[in-house]
Amino acid sequence: MTDTLASHADQTLHKSEPLIEMEDVGKSYGAIRALRGINLRVGAGEVTCVLGDNGAGKSTLIKIMSGLHPHNEGSLRVDGKEVSFSSPREALGHGIATVYQDLAVVSLMEVWRNFFLGSELTAGRYPLAGLKVRQMKEIADNELRKMGIVVKDINQPIGTLSGGQRQCVAIARAVYFGARVLILDEPTAALGVKQSGVVLKYVAAARDAGLGVVFITHNPHHAYLVGDHFVILKLGRMALDKNRNEVGIDQLTQQMAGGDELAELSHELKR
Amino acid sequence: MSQTLEAPAPAPSEPSNRVRMGLGQRLLSRPEIGALVAAIIIFVFFLALAPSFRSAESFFTVLYQSSVIGIVAVGVGLLMIGGEFDLSAGVIVYTAGLANSMFCWYFGVNMWVGAFLSLLFCLAIGFLNGYLVMRTGIPSFLITLGTFFVLQGANLGVTKLVTGTVSTPDVSQIAGFDSLAKVFSSNFKIGSVTVWGSVLWWVLFVGLAAWTLQRTRIGNWIFAVGGNADSARAVGVPVVRTKIGLFMTVSFLGWFIGMHQLYRFNTLQSGSGVGNEFLYIIAAVVGGTLLTGGFGNAIGVAIGAFIFGMTSLGIVYAGWDPNWFKAFLGVMLLLAVLVNLYVKRMATARKVG
Image 1: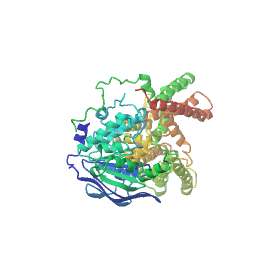
Image 2 (image 1 turned 90 degrees about the vertical axis):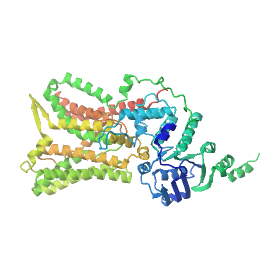
Image 3 (image 1 turned 30 degrees about the vertical axis):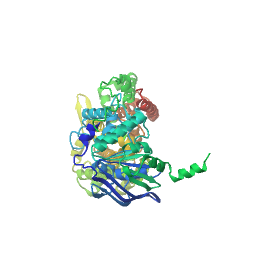
Image 4 (image 1 turned 120 degrees about the vertical axis):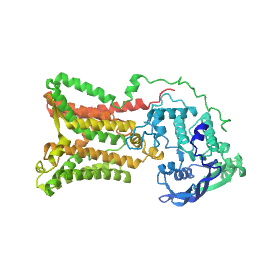
């Protein structure tokens, strides 16, 4: 795995150089303000963990970074240049690859087609150029094996795999194509203990290869294992923004669990 | 890190737990297999029942009949794999022919000019269909139902305005007619058998579509936008461009058959084409295309069109009342949908391991 990351990572990355910078970014969907006042910096060779409860705005945040929805307040800079992505294709062009929680794969398509979807290898640049099918199958198979996933047949529709395996295909794909920034939206939510461990190793390996990683999760324990920087979102705003040396796992857990509200609740429920 | 990171799991180097799926299972997960079986049964059926079905001449007549439906059906099949419908595909054929014919007759210009303008017009309609569907998010069924009625009305209305009747005037003397007829509706003889050029065009378009679907990036995108458009967009597939391109492909192929009808028959009835859109959809569905998108192939659609050609002529050759034809088509469609459902379940059922 590490060799995939090392060979695909952009060689010009320098540790802690800012890759994505957000300044006072906000997003509203019609009358509903999903996100406001976000200041976030994703550095090369760093893992930025974004934590938050359901509806806190985590998904909106990554949708802005990955180009699914453009932001409508504040500024987003990638490699120092102000951008507003109009499609995920543009974000991918900047080396930003994302694993979505809900939008992972196209179930009726074969595993290898899913792996290369949107970034197919072709024999030429003209529209009807043939796909390099054999090569694509080989690469997909190898990358999945590195994650410890052996599919019966790389030609089977991806819908025949289990949820965890599908998630792993999506992660392997993002690792393979994301040269600069890797965004993972709740990658461990659907996984068992062992596969969660594999994913966390990937996160660490991506960090060591110099990529910027944005790791969105519910789970403060997973976050603390790999994170360099922690952001907690609450109702669309930043509730905490600290480096690893400024915050402990207890504080993270407490903040995640509701912080003061939890203390109040435990007081009320005292038994 | 690379030292501390062990192989994450005991990934077997030998594909020991891989089973090659049995031949039957692999065949069943191909979209066109149901249609192929049906085609063989129907073929044998008519061979047995209709003596005049047994000649090479009638076989090529069947192929011709199939090609006229099959060429547009290939486009409709691609579009359906891409997850959309086009109900205006039947009428646009005649819109294309009428536009070419009446423009050249009214202004007295070369038929090539009219053919070219008609092509641009059809592509614009295809673009409009796609653009409206993508822009508004309204199901393509409704948008193209709208264009279907607009075109149907305009075909009748404009023809009445220009010619005063419901059919177009004779354009066979206008310059360019003969050369266009060579392109779109020529035929040649092999022995006693008449082979229509449209059959060759059909083979070409099917081949092109099959290659595109299975072996090109665009094909990958077509399956993806039909299977799950949101996922496709999220990994960088240009969903809007792909779908608009599919609508334009349908209108291009509709134009092509429109040209064939015009240069074969010289005059066109302005009310024709209504109902053909369903024949295209039936050919695609019988050929294994999933109504919900994301699954199907071009060969299957071709077989679907061939089944249509066989039955429409076979009933005549067998000396039956051709009025039953539609009833037969309906039964075929229902059977095809059932087979598709079964195949989809087979293909996506989780295999052990």
